[in-house]
Length: 361
Image (tube, rainbow, N blue to C red; front, side, top):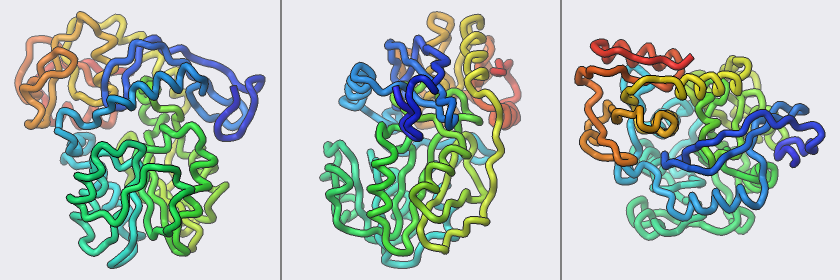
């Protein structure tokens, strides 16, 4: 098995973990085991790409339902003091580099159109285009956002150039990232920018549990990867908790010396193994949240799961994996598991001080 970023062969790879239970990126339980290795040459974390794995991922995508609890609408993130939607926050953090009126945008991996929604609220005059391997929502998206084009075939078949290309939680799903980024480079206008967001594995080791995430990026590894294709790589000063937002361009409007350096943390795999061991020994408890980390934790808890809690009023009363979602603002007679980074946990406890919480270390 070769590293999909640097090409190092299996003699230079070290398989470091077999994950017995996983969840899909749309938060469904996956009973199949997932293997994970770290390339010892470039440090990249990835799932092995073989025919069995690709078939399992294909089956996940055939019934893929992102944001199902919100009927396809982007869910609120409660990782900061005030709740926000991810795409609107990304655009706000990148606003100083966005072009002016009548720019052309291509949103790749558009899904239910959450980035198209965010850009439509921010810029009324942009020419919007979308790409997704699935076309089952294409007619609705074309009508709703007045799309100039909806693409579903290979990126290399697109002849247009774009001023902005967005990839929000797409690159971690790509099995051939070098070919993919080469295609993206050819789609950029002369002064165009690409906005990419991926999970930050150093800050969020729970991402290892997502079966269909092929790559698990550190800021350093994605920066070095992008510099193979683009002259300028920039990390916006304001970053979303647990995520890496990065802008790439071949035009000097993106300064190589600007932005912020994202700090590294050591051994995310060791942290994830500690989380799993802790989950296997917990008493009966509730789980706060319904995202991938919460869904994986609930799956590991099994019969010890008492139910879900959520701060989003639109989710309360609904069911996920057979358990009801309750209001996190109530007081409960059992502890509440918080499967999140410490900074986010501290914010949650400030908002919900009247319960007993279980933290993951």
